[in-house]
Length: 326
Image (cartoon, rainbow, N blue to C red):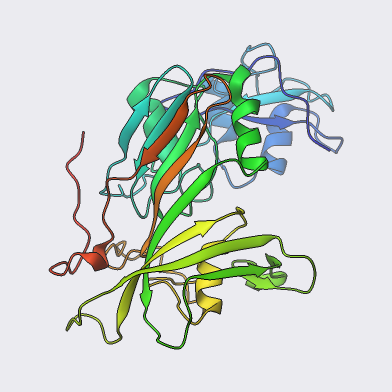
């Protein structure tokens, strides 16, 4: 069941929104005991409480000895160790009172989660524009670059979300993948895909049943032979009519055309060592090139286009260029 939206929440801090936790029945008597037991990954709850960094539903600081009553809520701000900066910048393509469109780089997550907090599109954009109300309208994988939309005003958010739910957004992607003469193109890929259970949840797979994922795959051109690549590559245009997780990556791999730089399809490669320096030399060759739709609030035709170029299309490139910081 969806939790009711709170009437009040604290302002963001340095672009990071506050998190909310509700007290549950248990052996704890105070908020200090509850937080230490419920969220043990953060060892500094006593210090946060002493600083006044944990607030009640009315915005008042909770004390370590404040009684913890089941059903009451507390607000706090996530804290992570220093994150290595992703050396690529977001570019604002459009900004008005309703929408913000950005050109997302590879390697930058959209939302805070896991080990990423400051190094996310959402937090960077909130800090850049000074807008705490920004919410992404859709998702792009961390590895994918291109056009990403955010809503500005909460009252209009539902109308824009309906565009995606009702498939009234026209989406165009580009990819670089192997070229195969035995794969007829253009081709409509239709299948039912679901997440795998257990440890393989990172990958989706096809299951019997009515199709829930549909992609039109077109060939743009074959790429010239290069000493950098051991296989013949081609430039593709992808038109997803649905928006399932990893839909484009899975459909291309199912055609025998796995997207260059993909560490998940067709084979899930080991996760990168967290203690090693990040490797930005092999970005996934997938780009959200264009989004277009009729605006449900203003009625105008909207079209947003990425200005980025896939690395594999730059014949002289061996690594993506780090962009200057704004």
